[in-house]
Image 1 (cartoon, one colour):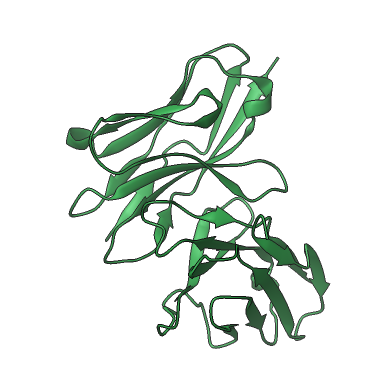
Image 2 (tube, rainbow over the protein chains, first blue to last red):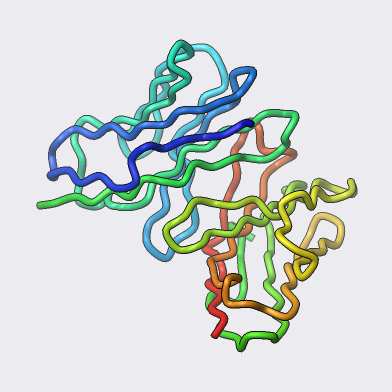
Length: 113
Length: 115
């Protein structure tokens, strides 16, 4: 079945440290891939998306993600985390056959000062 | 409007009552989606509207759930005879066409608590 997996439920990093959030997908063909962030009490905001081409995509707020076909992964990274990055992060995938985004279960990021 | 608007932002209801949740999509967005987010869980797809096509209801968890959309405007999600397991945040999103290029724009959600 088509699915998106985020193996880490909760991650804690120190402010200024680097961050990597993992995302794996299981689809027959490469889907379109997205990362969203959800701050407390807010809706989801799109960070970045990958459709094709360059496997390293840049997003807002200093985030980037790398698509690796061989690993079926689309991990989100940030070189230096800020306290305001504390939020829930969702990876999502879209295929034309489904016509809707399928979300992972999310990773909650905590940032310590 | 400038964003996706959902109302009410919070709703507390007694078990067995019916509730209606409203979503105002971004003007010009033809696609509209409803998702449910239970505490500590990911987003669960409920229903999808695209223009005047028949909606994709494949995610509705039971016949107590229904949704309507008039043209390309407001959508209403109705839950009849609410149960405690219906407690969740209900998120609405809209997109231009089917969202494959642009992604979705989400509302802030309606937090439903069934007591």
